[in-house]
Length: 232
Image (tube, one colour):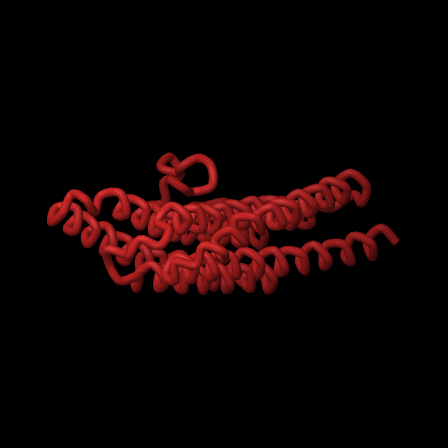
């Protein structure tokens, strides 16, 4: 009886992760769209909706702790539950990045963009594609996929470096561009960090299946992680 209950609850937790991931991916997509379109109203909605992502995280964490306390999970089950705790934490932080981009949109307001917003949406597309497949790897316990996804982080990093170089050139050409350049760089930085968070999820997938914890991207450095919601 305990085993059936535990299996049912583990499946439900995985369904909740899928739901939370979809919330986060939508928030990132919408936040970048709002930035590109100067959509202040949408930015306000994204900022407000972050509370729902946080609520989902805390609800899943609470359910995990109840299962550990009441259902006598075995070692493999505990690895799954530990992965769930890690994944929802990473998802919540990616949601913070969407909120941060929403705040950046508010700060820029209706001021014309100093550059065409092209690379930032591409970064979002790549990072969220990585996230979608990382969640799929967790659901299918696909270690090969989990190991492969972090290699795509280089594409996101390259775009970030390109944005950084272009904004620096704009500042050098006209110091008045500094404020908005800083805002746009923070938006790009949030997406670069979102991709790094996906790498952390992939590491948990590998741990869930193999019991081994190893870094899949040696270049990831959480010491540079900004505090708060990823807004300047």
